[in-house]
Structures are given as structure tokens and as C-alpha cells.
Length: 236
Image (cartoon, rainbow, N blue to C red; front, side, top):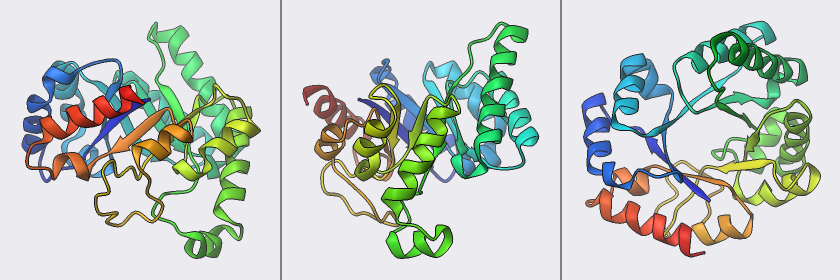
């Protein structure tokens, strides 16, 4: 398992100050996730600053548009030099396949390695009732269907809750990656997340990437808690 720190503080300066405190923890199993708020506010400058600190970057913009626009946007994200991006699986097979084809084209044209691409299935802020209101299907059933579509479209993995991870892997391939938000490692508050889980539950569900934000950046000692989380991940 690998840890993705969700970087979502009030300013770029606070985000970078947090990363400076965690710079000693850089490793192949530690990523920094830049989401919508931070990227819209701070833009490419933030990406460049994080790269300068040596961290791997997960740019979590959840692209969702018509196929050509999504492919163009994914290409532009890749040119930033980020290591992972997200798109919405609800955009459909044509859009997902188009993104992967455009990124392959980028590799050939630019000579750069493409980022990992994960498809978003059901946001962990949904519960069964709110999800069914929009998708007219149970979360676990629809997440698996979307996972299969993402796998068949050539994506590297799927964003899902811990509770869908095993079923999606069984329906696709054990090597198909799952990235699970809503991780509360040591029974912290669930905040606005509905389907939260512990590190142990994530391990049992064979999750490959754990997204953890507030339990780290709201902690009085983010370095100590991140070290504890990494130790927990590596010991399981």
C-alpha cells in the first residue's frame, strides 16, 4: 500500500510549509495529492514548488467532459509532469479510451512517461440513498460496473471506497489498482465522508493507495502522525 497525502490547507504557503515538515519522509510509497481548491487557487506554480521539494504528485481534478475535451485536458495535465491523474468513469468508454490514447500519443511525441490514470467511481461522500437518487443503482453494483468499464478502457485503476475494492478486483484483475479515499487511520472523525475505513480494513480489501488528509494536516504533529501511518501501512 501507498499513502497519498491530500494537500488541502487554506493557502499555498501553508501547504508548502506542511510538506517541508514532511520532506524527510519522501519515498516510493508517499504521494502528495493536489485537489481542485489548491490547483484552482495556486495553479502550476504549486505543482512546480512540490516537484522542487521532490515529492510525487497526484493531480486530482476528476476530469469530466466530452471525450475530446477530456483527452486534451489529460494531455495538458501530463505535460505538467505530474505522476497520477483522475477522470470520471461516468464520462463513458469513449472518453476513457480517448484519454489513454492521447496520453500514449503524448509519450511518443514528447518523450515523457505518462501519469497513472484512475477513474472515479462513486465519491465517498455518497451514501446509498444519495447515490441511488442520481445513478438509480446501489453503490456497490454501480461501482463494480464502472470499474469494469475503466479496466476495459485501459485505465490503470479505479477510485472507490474500501468497501468496493475487493469486488472490483475480482471482476477485473488483481493487478487493477484501487485508490481509496475516506481513510481514517486511527478512528478519527469521518467529517463529510460517509463510507470511511481504517488502514486495517484497507489492507484487507487489498487497496493499493490510501488517501488521507485531515487526520494528518489537522494533527498537532503532522510529522509524527504521518510516520505512524507509514509504519502501520508497512507493518500490515
